[in-house]
Image 1 (cartoon, rainbow, N blue to C red):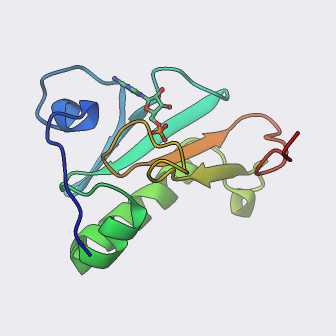
Image 2 (cartoon, rainbow, N blue to C red):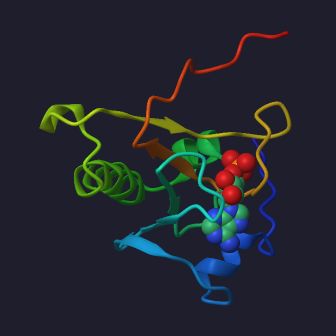
Length: 127
Ligand code: AMP
């Protein structure tokens, strides 16, 4: 598999400190910040600091340390943002868009965490 990473994408610029972000959590390998156009009362983006294009790229090629850090950071965020059903909260949705069919706008892997309202069905039915 061959992935081509564009280091001029907006999240790469955020990671280099070239543009600001509203950070919620930063760990060794992971950054989480609020989405600039929130689709729900809580809308946070979780990104690895490494140069990965999409979910399968990250899952296949990231180190175990990066993957564990990313997944544990996402759990911490669900706790911090009071979304976890395990703590009696209402729940949330994670989404990761990939490529053209997934309508991915920013070609740096990211997980959306959405919550704070009922989110409706996962994928709208076609008209
Ligand atoms: P996707 O369509 O899955 O690639 O999602 C990209 C997300 O990045 C969208 O929800 C945008 O609102 C969000 N976004 C774009 N630029 C920024 C930015 N500078 N800071 C925070 N979120 C951003």
